[in-house]
Amino acid sequence: GTAFPATPPAAPPYWSRWHVATADGNMSSATAVISGLPSNSVVLTSIIGAACALIFLWRHRSKAVKQAELPADGIFTISSLSRFNGVSGPLCMGVCGKVVNVSSSENITVGQGYGKLWAGRDATYALATLSLKAEDANILDFTLDQFTDDQRKALAGWYKHFTAKYPVVGRLKEYENWDFSSVEKEAESQTPFGLGKKEPAAKPVSADEPVTVRAGDRVRLQGLEGDESSLNGCVGELKSFEAAKGKFSVKLDEKEEPVLVKPANFSKV
Image (cartoon, rainbow, N blue to C red):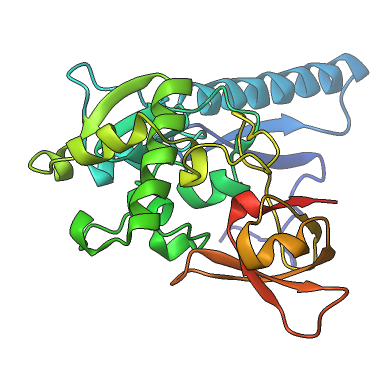
């Protein structure tokens, strides 16, 4: 019979298998001699490897998510509006049934402040109640009649601010049967935050985006009238926001008990 060696021959030490991931997720194999060959073969192997990597990166890049485009008919839904968050599409938000493109705002940015709350979302309820809670965006189970006079004025002020300063690019389908004419009428005499006419003792109200405030900020009271007029100029610490009253709680340095004031009646120190 045929004689066999006592031990099987060792696999050639100079063969190795190099796996390259392709764009479709499969594995292709390229066998290359990595030892025992002239140096130019090793260089060729390196070039082939680099080329495969470049092809993979190019194909991966070509599959990037396409940016959302504004609907041609201008009709948005709460669901479709979510794509216009400043990342997968322009930064838009809803207010009183209209959709505004606030991409040009320096104060509404992706993942920060107002952008974190309202980007790609409807802010109508939050604006009326002066809420800075994320869960108060996209709320639809409310009526305009349930708002207080101050809340309606606040909503009218915000409506005027956003629709006058930024382009209106459409409307929300969920609000198509709503009547916001009272808000629009109120907006004619209101400014952001629903401050109404500028009070004589108050400082001029800026038409720019309201400054973001946080608990712990130092503030100075202003524009108070009547029994509270003596507090104008007093400095204290911002404690909290009471959504039910639409006012901020401020602990003044000169008083033990905190006072409640509207956004118009204080400025950051």
